[in-house]
Amino acid sequence: QVQLVESGGGLVQAGGSLRLSCAASGRTFSDYAMGWFRQVPGKEREFVLGISRSGGSTVYADSVKGRFTISRDNAKNTVHLQMNSLKPEDTAIYYCAARRATFSSTMFRTYDYWGRGTQVTVSS
View 1: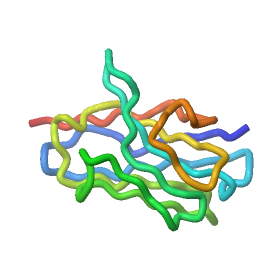
View 2: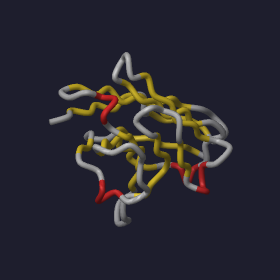
View 3: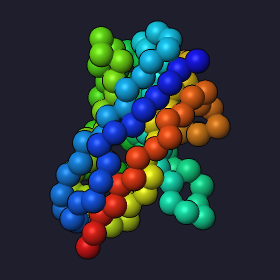
């Protein structure tokens, strides 16, 4: 089992920044590729960014390229999502996810473990 706990969400004005963190425990963190997803009510969970288990490979959704970055610290069992130039359409619950694989995936069904999510609200 891997436990994931997100933090750092909140309310921010458009154009602002937030940094989300995900703390992992339970298994060897470096065995898992990580992903960030987001979801709004009535819509399917949407891939945002992913990072390989070494941190050497990242994947971004087109909607966040140039604004969001993902990083991980395997020594501290954490993964971070830096969000800049936030837009109202970024408003969602953001979830951290782990999959026992070398590389991340854009498909949420391929992830094994999920956090409970953290709310991000961007006001216009």
